[in-house]
Image (tube, rainbow, N blue to C red):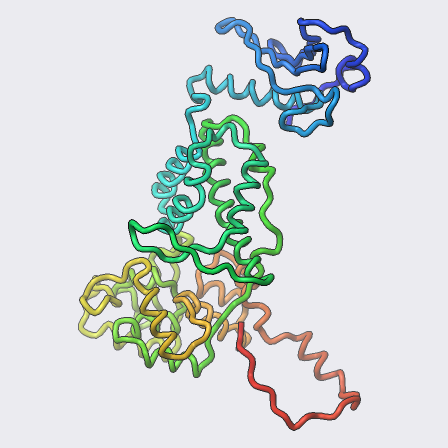
Length: 429
């Protein structure tokens, strides 16, 4: 960060008040060829940035109104220190523009999103469908046409608040107006909307950071100053018990039953299972090879005896390159094709609330955690890069030494009588 300079004539409102009104600014040099000046008018002053080079000569720009009357807001009304920061932003833009790397005003947020998607594809990023959905649903409609270099913290925060306060989107037929689900009430509903907002903000920041790295945007202060909602991503993991698992599997059609069972015995993601070929199952080691996971890395999932028996059956008669799991018509399971079948299966299995396919992965990991399997082992099975995500979601389910010790040591006090009314089992979350 550049050092903020001081000047006895310009630092304070009182000092500037003593200056004479004149057209020529009172200049403070920042470095060779660049400076910031204060032009005093009859009703207040203005901050002026000045840049000189042999090729382009002198260039000037008004960067904001001085805080002679109104308190500085950092955007339009500026202190001397803030004026220096704004001037430096302009100097950076000029450097890029003079070098042919930046076309001021022509590079929009939509351009940044397009560049980010291209780079995401080039790097082999997983979840392209989700990324493009976020951009098309939340970013481009509201911010797409805005000049990326002119984004402000307030504009981004206003946009983010609008997402957090809007109802969740519902699946909508192509060509129809976007449908929305009813806005639920309560703290958890608000947390979910804020969690969605945080995910969208992450995509916006990633795209703008890439644009900054590629020298398409000179300054990144606007979006780095925007903070995500706190405590919005608190884990609330839903999982199925054994009875629910049995009911769900029994009501599934043949093609859905196979891939649902695979998820329950392996913890693999829907996309990972849809890409499996018969050659990915190693009967000798009892492992399932995931060639490319969400992180871009491969991993081997160790199967239980039940898992080995299941995969041994589903690959019978298949060649090494044949897909293991296909639709009933022989086609590959595509993105989102499991949504409606899963919804129908949950309805028939009387699982309330209904679950998404991803909950099968949570069920697998939760069962391991509740049996005391180390978090590092679970992380390896799931393909997490370290144990942080695993601990965040499943550590509370693991047998606790602290809890076991407290309950064993704290003997009953006899201060209330035990009821003979048995409480119904609560729903897990």
